[in-house]
Length: 266
Image (tube, rainbow, N blue to C red; front, side, top):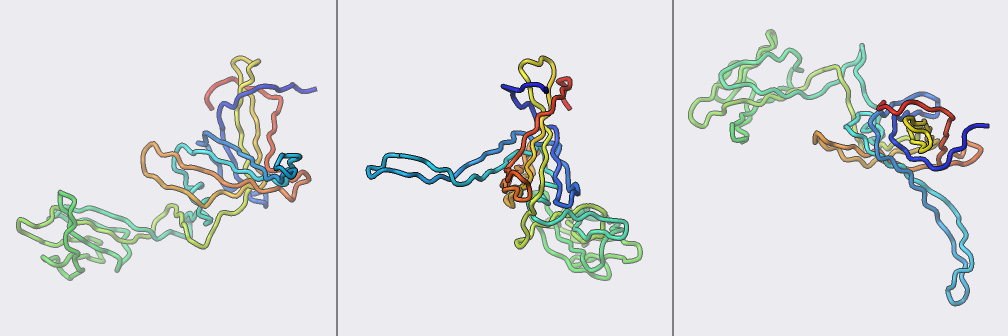
């Protein structure tokens, strides 16, 4: 007979793995914390003529899963958007914007600019934005120049007290990288989410045990906030759906294997 588990306390989530229903791993989550599973139920009350409760009949259950990811995660952003994460491949690059700042009186080489996409505007030390300039054959007070052979951009030759100190250059480029698109007509797909958590057994000093939390039918929420603060936590949440393909119609499973490991950060 295996061990008997009574009181315990979860210590942390070590990692989570999301899978589709073709048994393919979609992504891993390694910074999840503060996870909560909440199950609610709907009931129907039977009362007497004076409103006294005679019997409460529970009809259905529903659940949610909420956790915080310690950092921004492109997999979570893609999952909440309902669009797959686009990754540049050997035969496919992604078109994306690029921004450069160039000092007045100097030049810059744009080796990766897509022709016809370059825009230039003045920038001042106090944050003000100056004029927009057109592409010309030679740089002048009203135009910038771009040599398609050497890829060298020469900013406008503006002079005087009101001349900008720098120029903003924005253009499109074909680049390796990632792309997340959040479109209004796409929503997250239902997945299977398996979490490996570590918990403390008060009768087992200096060690922790693993537990596996399985959400067999989980739909991530399409609602997400993208913050750019350095201490950002990105919420990862969604709804527990009934696992109709399983024999138990479960919202979740928690497995407690008879294993133990030293209590060290993992």
